Image (cartoon, rainbow, N blue to C red; front, side, top):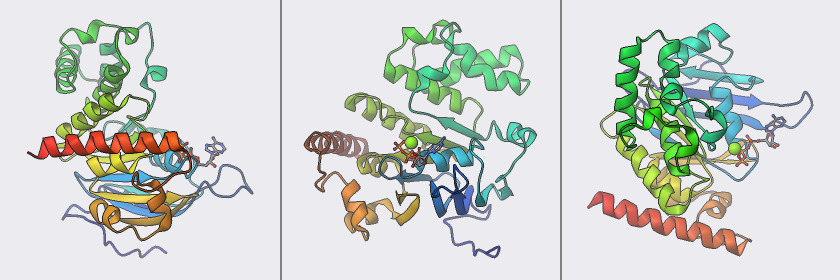
Length: 287
Ligand SMILES: Nc1ncnc2c1ncn2[C@@H]1O[C@H](COP(=O)(O)OP(=O)(O)OP(=O)(O)O)[C@@H](O)[C@H]1O
Ligand SMILES: [Mg+2]
């Protein structure tokens, strides 16, 4: 299995991230949470990872970030095997490989101004105080937060603003890849649309890659060039997002799409509404 041909959407630098036959088991004899999953992300590419609750999305993200042990398979980041990277090797990766999670509030210290939290990875990397302040101010501006935000505390921000803070903290080190795990799921629809637009803007003209984990195909359609559909830890389908949406090959993919019926009418209505808000945003952005 070592000679996996490189058929990913890559350039002369190779792929940004390559996941090969990844298996993650939480208990010795338990069924794998992630079962033989392979995919690649090219430089500057956004890959959507979609699947119902419990399908293994977060586990894949955490395996890439080194937060859960890999049972078997390989993870390569910029050609380098990081499957079982040591703590010291992980520290080296910390600036290049970043994460945005669903609930940024839980990871923000309520007693520290948010500028400190954003500058923390720079401080660890030995960046001077003056430069930290400058880069923090610049990144806050780039995510659309008002001047002076750096001195304010987490509770003084709305949910959408806190998500922008989490994005700022991920981007301040100028990373290569950001793992976004349900980064917008907790927000109301119009705030979701704003944050998704922000992510799309930040990516434009940059070499930044995203692994974008979501429940909704609408969100993936808006942001991701390619999509991987996961079901019970296995890849059901993979392809160019537009093609998968136009002509899903797997019945399970249809279930995930807003247009297809889901058993829960509230959930169905919610998906339809999100889909419509994002479609409208997409059109507005394109014109
Ligand atoms: N720390 C853990 N210990 C044991 N089992 C776990 C652990 N974390 C996740 N699992 C199991 O692994 C499987 C995949 O979980 P995971 O959190 O990766 O799914 P997910 O696709 O992210 O779901 P959601 O959409 O709800 O976030 C599930 O069966 C879950 O119960
Ligand atoms: Mg999850």
